[in-house]
Every structure is written in structure tokens, then in C-alpha cells.
Length: 184
Image 1: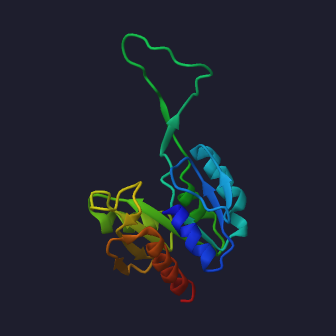
Image 2: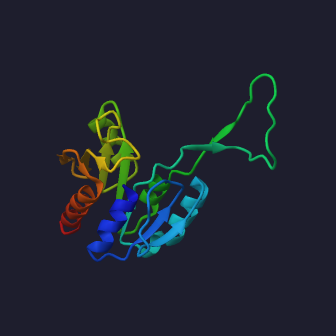
Image 3: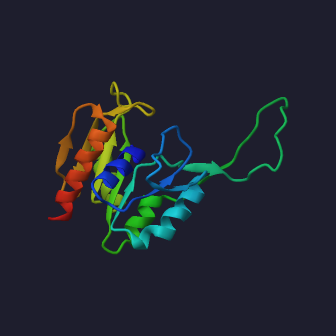
């Protein structure tokens, strides 16, 4: 969804900076892209640019955990188990929600149970203006496909359930709703 949203925003006239992690999506050459490889690099790139943006859309599925240590060399196969200690990554949206000064924040959430309730909690906890929720159990709404079916929840609790559609078309709908939120 991130690349589709960036494309739609660009077409609508926005100055877009796409912080893009590892993925399969094809990024059009007209977009300004900051490529990152890790959750830490993504957080750093976003935090460095946040004060200059009006709207931040966090569509990336950033890892919640990362290995505590990185091996300098290949880890050889051995008998038994390999224990891989993990540490939490920085929650980019929650950090932005605490430090924002007038910016609009849009988050994304993957939920399979209690979709509205869990998403409303996340919206409030992270101080978001909108949250876009998809359930990967829904046909055509999984990662790596050209379609999505989402529920969008506004800060005031208003819920929009949108049918399955092309991700670019969906991106325009999200941005049109965002424009209405901006003018309220």
C-alpha cells in the first residue's frame, strides 16, 4: 500500500518522500525514495524528516522485534537448537504521536480479531488521526497482491468499510478522506 499511496499523493500534487524498506513493490522513478534495510534505519530516516512534513502515512509493516546481536560471520549449523535473543524495535508511529506538532498521522494495522476495537485502541494509543485496517484473512486483502479491502477509522470514531478494490484506487479514496479530515 505504501507505494500506491505515494503514487496517488504525487498524482494529487503532494511533495512525496517515500521511505522504502525491503519489498517487492516497484517504485516509479518520479518518486523521491529513501531506501532502508532495517527497522532502525527506517525509524532514523522518518525521524530525520518528520519535522518538515505536514502528513505522515505509516503504511510499512515494520518489524516489532530485531535480533539483539548481529553475527559478523555465517552461523554454522550445529546439533541442537539455536537461541536467537530479540529486542523490541522503536515504535515509529507511537514516537511520532508523542512528538508531533500539528502534523497529520495515518497508521496502518493488520487485525484478524476484534478489528474495530483493537484498531481504535491503537489509534488512541499512538495519537493518530486515521487508521487503515486490513484483515489478511479476507480474500484479496493479503500482502503481495494488487488489491485490498480495508476499514478506515477516523479519530472521532467514524468507521468507513470499503470493498475490495485496486490498491491505487483505494489510495485515492484514503487520500480524499484525509483531505476532508484536514479541512475539518
